[in-house]
Length: 92
Image (cartoon, rainbow, N blue to C red; front, side, top):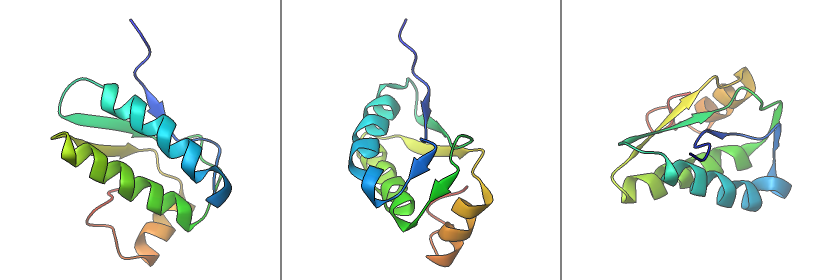
């Protein structure tokens, strides 16, 4: 059985956004059930691109009838989500 865990990379900035999005989208959509879990514990460096990636993942999952559950979000990511006012969309 393939590993269906999905996790954020150690670094998620503009430079990594597109490849990371593609990789995480595939992993999340492959997860069974209606809730797709994304582990953010490895994330050490991020910018606003990380928020954009998460919002796009959320949208893609919603189109498939799934919800995104983000786990272990670091403080920097929580701060960015709050800064952009998307806490209601991304529970970190």
